[in-house]
Every structure is written in structure tokens, then in C-alpha cells.
Picture 1 (cartoon, rainbow, N blue to C red):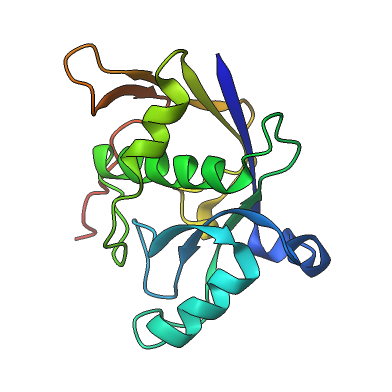
Picture 2: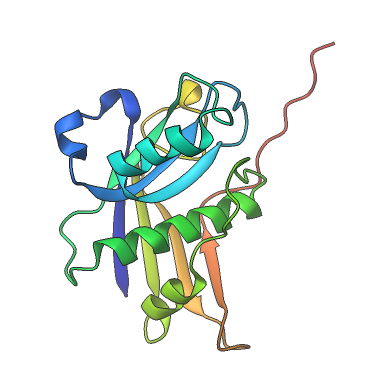
Length: 175
């Protein structure tokens, strides 16, 4: 089993020095986001934030809130690939649980997920904070949340996954 550890921290808890040159993934909740994140992304975190300001400044309402996880200690020295895999799988979980981000257009890289789970199970271990919960409601996770992925037996270009998230709870309207 190949495991990618993702410890999500809240934006407000991250030290800027930690992000300089860091590769990882992030979940942006802008000022308008209530039940679904605005964007799930990966890459060189500070560069990507800067890119979002240039490209999406009108689409992302200020102030931003959210979560970030840095890829570190990779045993196979594949930080960028691991980041794209986690991004794709978080997007899958978000879609499956009615938390699909509002701004993401590209669904992520299926080929990279398949690369990691062709010969063994892939496990994403989420700790810290749940990135699919609005930051205003965030509480530290008491246990690790998992996404487990295996190559599909039915087709060469797909995979099956299970996760610890349930469908988003819909609140009743206040009358």
C-alpha cells in the first residue's frame, strides 16, 4: 500500500516561511463560499495563490479562507505527482459528496492516480483539519480520514475509491 499523508492546516495557522518554495495542495473558501469550497488546487503554493489573484481576482471574493497541506518526506521523491493525485481525489470526493468547488474547471489528472494504484492500493491519509468543511466551522480531526484507491477491474483507464466522507448534510431552511 502506498500512502500519501496530507496534514491540512488552516490558512491562519500557517507560517509564511513554511510556504516558501513548498509544494502541496490547498482548498480555498472565499467570502461567498458557504457549503462548497471555491477551489481545490495543487502546486507551488505561494506561486499558485499569486496566479489565482492574477487570473481569478474577480471570481474569488475577498477575504480568502481555507486550508493548505505541504507534501514533505516523500519516499519516492515525487512531490508534484503526489500533489496532483491528492487534488484529483479531493475533487472526486467533493463531487461524490455534493461539495464540488465552484471554480474548478479541470477535474485533475486521472493518469497520475492510476500510476500510483496500478500495482498496489493507494491511500490518502487526511489529518489536521477536514478541508471540505467551511473554515468557520472547522475543528481539528480526532482521527485520520482516508481515501483508498484501487485500479478498476473493469477498465484500464479508471479506478475505484472509498472515502470517510458522507454526503453533505443539507440544513432545513429557517422559517
